[in-house]
Amino acid sequence: MRPSSLAIAFGVGRVLFGGAMLAVPGQITRVWVGAEDAPAVVLARCLGGRDIAIGAGLALAAGRGGDPRLWLAGGVLADTVDGIATLAAGDDIPRNGRIATTALAGGSALFGAWLARAID
Image 1 (cartoon, rainbow, N blue to C red):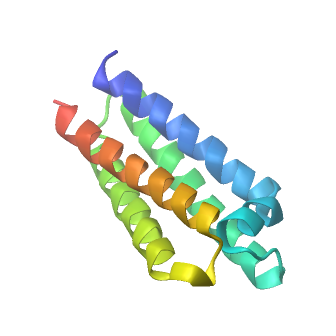
Image 2 (cartoon, rainbow, N blue to C red):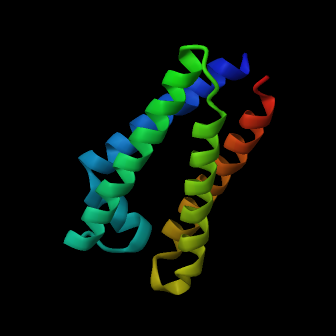
Image 3 (cartoon, rainbow, N blue to C red):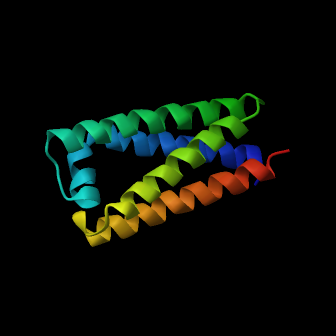
């Protein structure tokens, strides 16, 4: 698969994840941080909007023959911060949520960094 096609798919996946954060934020925050109160839901929706923006920008840039590397770099930064912040919370959030979120954020950051280097 060409790197530009991977970038489009990665962007669409990010949009879908962001949409889930907007649609069912309480379910996600319950697993992630152990809360589904209004502050957790507000933050989840903000993160969902961020992921939709990054994913859409990435997919559109790659799909239109533009340079998606800045969008990838933004995603790598956001994912890295998400992973570090989740790890830093330690035992204040559920263990399974901490592990899953750190793995998802770390994997996404690593894939985004690899993909940015793979694009000509």
